[in-house]
Length: 55
Image 1 (tube, rainbow, N blue to C red):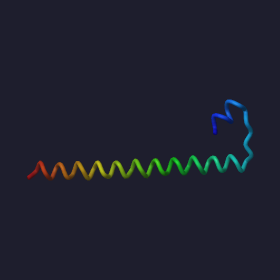
Image 2: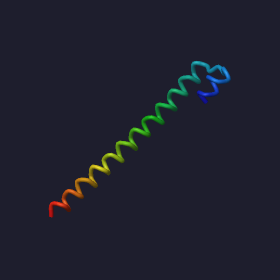
Image 3: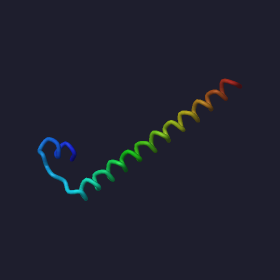
Image 4: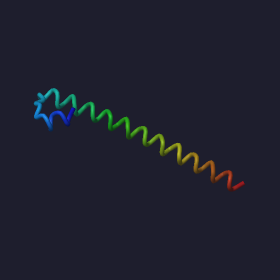
């Protein structure tokens, strides 16, 4: 959508820009939460591996 605005010089109203901002903010938050969850799982796996090696 943003490419369309830039390349084809389409105009967006203030409300449409706000909506676009909300959409991209939501996508960013979703990606951040997913990345955080993946990191937490990796840390837990590394702790588990350390316990196994310690035995």
